Image 1 (cartoon, rainbow, N blue to C red):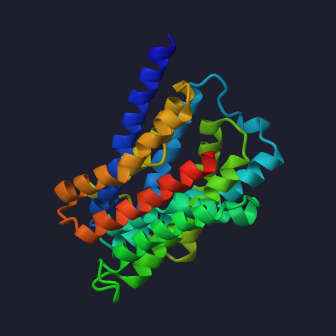
Image 2 (image 1 turned 30 degrees about the vertical axis):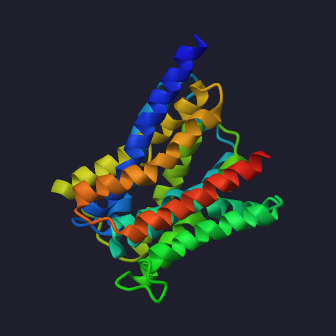
Length: 296
């Protein structure tokens, strides 16, 4: 019985891995047909609808009438970080950069999480952990400078700042999530709802016309809303729940950026640069070293 549960966990983790690995390509292709803030508006709306339907079928669905002020304040704060600020920054980064650069730099969030945890959660960082962080940081430099170390070349500097900045926003959201013990699908749904309200306010304040997308823009918005903002999180959480050891499935996610590069090459049409692969290797080595050191 335990073996079948673990096998189920592996299958679910692989499904989540494949879906998340398609996202860099989905972002870049969809942004050819729709503005970054419009994409955030519509994909968030799709995510809310899908998560609401999923939440209705679990044992303890979210009871909106029983929400406490603390639940509302917490979700308002978390919704501000994700989806609002995180995806607003990330989608703009994808608009300005090649998908391979934006996606790989965004993947530095585990590194950012360690640094922020030391600051806000008072977690101690060893000398070796600092070395691991520097290894990942070296990978960021390789990618940002296209391996030249003399300048940013054709890369958009503002886009690079946004891509790295998105990792800070995600790490901030992750720290908040660690302290939030509510049922997962319910709290993500509530976070999405408040995030969507922030997005709507942003669209109104910036005088953006909200228009229903068509064609590839609509398909991309639906795909991202379903598989970036809702379903894949549920699949991943189910994988962790069915595993007898979360490390067995969580390590699978380190394959994601490499698979994403292959998908980008085939679907977006970008030639993957040697500097991107080399930089990603350094980033992953640093993150894996950090995970190993944390276990000691």
